[in-house]
Image 1: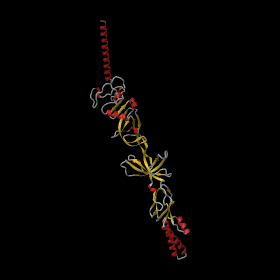
Image 2 (image 1 turned 180 degrees about the horizontal axis):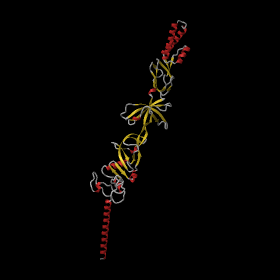
Image 3 (image 1 turned 30 degrees about the vertical axis):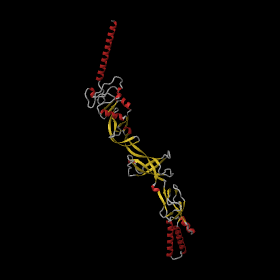
Length: 424
């Protein structure tokens, strides 16, 4: 009997506790859902730390801190764009020459025998046995004798002999006989069997086109030379950068062969045709090469500093390119940001030019731009996304009505106040 009474007592106590728990939960649910929603400075309802209304996003201090939001002002600044590319050293075509023969004869001796040797202007390069040269010497000696023997003859005879002597001397000069050799012939009155050929130009031998024993004719090429004291550099500039390159632009050049050493050059020519395969334009740069360090066919790195002038700029991190347009988020107040479309120019030094869409002094978001843009997309569907600081997002549908494009929002789960993070 006593045990039956105890069992009934336990059942009564359990039922009473259950009624109290259910009643408390119902009261908590009713109070929480009847609590008035917070509003922002414009009178719009706001139940979370982040609220999006179309292209406008509002973030409270905690949301801005969690997102790492940063801003910067649009300023007028002078930029210098640095264009880096590669290039290849080539011979200076203006300094490329040939040494040619002016006489007919047999080459009996060569004084320059290897390609790559340097020939100075006026240097002896070969000895040639030439009947033409021998005959020209004898003709000149004959005119000298006639002038000397007939110097007391009539005036007309003297003039004719002097003209014949000058013509014979001119013939030797046209054969490229040096003045010193002509003077030696006048002094000794002895002809030479071999004529010494002297270089008309100086430069490095690129190709030797004769051998001892070869028979040469007037106009034959003996050596091809190039003046490597100046060289050309052909650099590849992408089409997006070519607008900033102009003739006369200074270029800095570096090579892996000479670490830490910088060479300078100047843009002299821009190819008018774009390479369809590489989408680049060949730019010719002329460079001084007195020490001969820059070798033809050597690959080098080039840097061009292009001044862009003063313009309105913002940090590159503020730009969000959607593919169809370029946007930034402009700060209207400390916690409110509005999406705005802009037109951009060139980028340099971490900044980008703004051609239209912003005014100097306006503040733009430079960090957390993508996060804010995602909130505007959520806002376009009638939803407010939050980081979970105090409850669920509120919409007209949450109050019982059906908002356009939105679904009823479930009450928050019992637990911690930061449960809203799972809704991202």
